[in-house]
Image 1 (tube, rainbow over the protein chains, first blue to last red):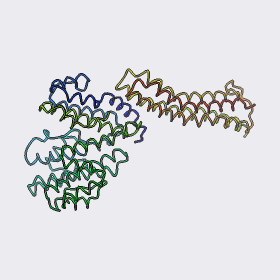
Image 2 (image 1 turned 90 degrees about the vertical axis):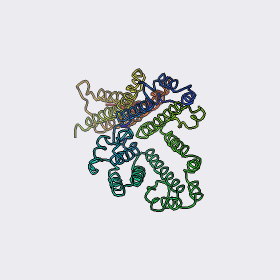
Image 3 (image 1 turned 30 degrees about the horizontal axis):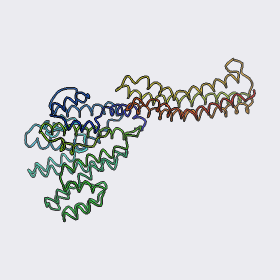
Image 4 (image 1 turned 120 degrees about the vertical axis):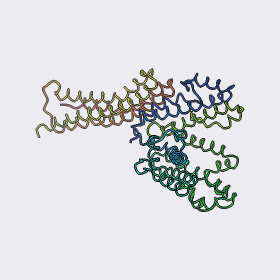
Amino acid sequence: MKNLDYAYCVARLRANESYMLNKAFMLKLCESRDLDSALSSLTEVGWISEKGGIKDIISRKNKELWLLLNECVPDKKELEIFCVLNDFFNIKAAVKCTFTGAEPYDYYLYPSSVSLGKLTEKVRLHDFSSLKLRGADTAEKAYRTALLTENGQSAEIIIDRGAVDCLCEYATEKKSGLANDICGFLCDTANIKTALRINALGKNRDFAEEAIGNCFKLDRKNLIKLALGEKEELYGYLSSTEYSEGAALYGESAALYEKWCDDEVIKRVFSARYTAFGFDPVCAFYYGKQSEIKSVNLILTALQAGVPADEIKERIRLSYV
Amino acid sequence: MDNLGMVLAVLGAAFAAGFAGVGSAKGVGLVGEAGAGLLTEKPDSFGRVLILQILPGTQGLYGFLVALLIFIKTGLLSGSPVALTWMQGLYFFAASLPIAIAGYFSAVYQGKVAASGVSMIAKQSDQTSKAMILSAMVETYAVLALLISFIAVFRITV
């Protein structure tokens, strides 16, 4: 697709950006008396159109976002890049539920690049070859491992590794600079998290080799070696990379690391606010909107649980607008 | 070979109207696409979008004017064409090139600027005048090319 083919799409998304919630509104929302008052504020600005529980509202917003992108992006295949993590998570849910007999629809994430009904059916029938999905091979491997070893954790590791490898694949093959950068970032930060966990839990080399996937800017062999060694050496290596701030935050808490990852993605997409055509503004809008939805979800859930405003403010994600 | 002069003059007119017209069609089309995107979300922005969409359309008009002038000068419009030497024909052809080339490229680039302007007013509707000025700057070079083509065609003696 040529960049100019995105003229309609970019103008439409820019118009939608003018309705996005800014930082000042988010901070005000954190200070709401209770959940009802926050919901009223969101209704007033038109963010919520129908009443419902937090889960329903968030799910509706995700569906609206996906629908909008599908309506205006000229090449729908470009959108698959946003579904990588959800697709692999859904594969995990489908494989697990096949063994436990639970209802996978309760766990599935939206959006997905493949019909969730089709995914459920194909995994149940063990028909992975006709599943037109990047993770089909991983799903088959995970299913067979779970069947042979009766070990759910091994299957999970295979699927998580598959997701990271898929991100790395996208990062190196995608033409758009921004999508490339973000996939690479997500791939590396997932590997860092795995490496830090392996280090903390004292796992062995086989586990590390299996769990740590291909890296974008990091040295995979070195990361595996250091994950199996001393904690200080691993942190020392990470502090010499562009992920040093995140690694230091992981030492404090995993939640802070997650927030750092989300905020870094938003910082990366800021440049696309001034790009007139092409896929980059789509990418920026998607991650910007995701960040907004995540923040609202966090605020509403925290207000429901009675968390103080100051604590909520610390956790809300960076706003795109 | 007797008509070579007239063939070259008509080719010049075709270049002026054709290239400038294609450029304008591309530019107007691009702004139209961007405008449709904005109007899907904010239908009340139609007036603002229309002004920006018109801007890249002027080059096509300039090309048409130069082509018309060539037709008048060569007598094609009145139905009694004058006899042109190949050198005179070549003059007409050369005179049409500024608006053909500058018209095509300026229309395409003006379209890009205007489409970006649509994205700008999608977020800040009070910035329409700025979007128009930015887009109108590209027009300068189409106007200069029109002047040169116009003077050149006008000065050819037949």
